[in-house]
Length: 251
Image 1 (cartoon, rainbow, N blue to C red):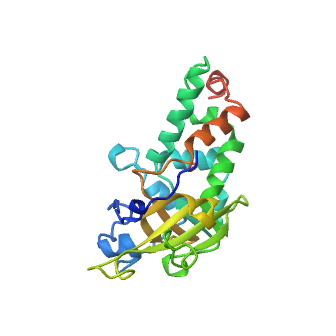
Image 2: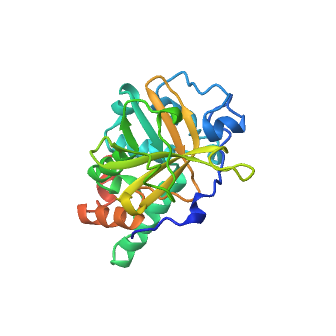
Image 3: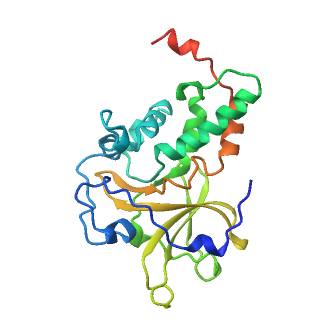
């Protein structure tokens, strides 16, 4: 369902995730790629794994995402290709899967208990929405103001899967002065940009730079995997949900 952007959505409310970079505790880094060291000595996949400790569930942000990457057979993208990745957290993924599970159960089916039951093609299609080829840090992205979209539209990029997405940097206000406050990346699914009809995902932590690209971590509190979890659920159902028993036999 389309979601019209309203003025109050432009308020900058950054939910920080302090453990993403052990040496990145400066708030200016978390908001606008400021003073702390953003580099990670490893691949994007290794970064995600480093923030998914099995023995510390409270600090596990990406274990579901890692499983999806493997189910989609896209490990090579995150290990070898130079990409920009807008990383959804476990919470975003689980909200979308929860709605799928509810819809599937209401259709008279058993609950979905394993991400493997969803077709790999579905995971690949939706995961590709979050990947841009090449490297884009905050400084490479133009300004967006969704109340003045003609003047500050951000920029449309084509994702890894060929879908147009809009990326822009929101410039906050400070002391009543426009555009001089903190900056935050906005990653948006495009319905109709001419009338500011976008489905937004704010970046909580930007400019993490592994060896093969850039990671911008999406805010966990209000982003659903796939941007529209109902459309995600309908797509998964359309492609078919596999029986859990077929995986139990091979494991």
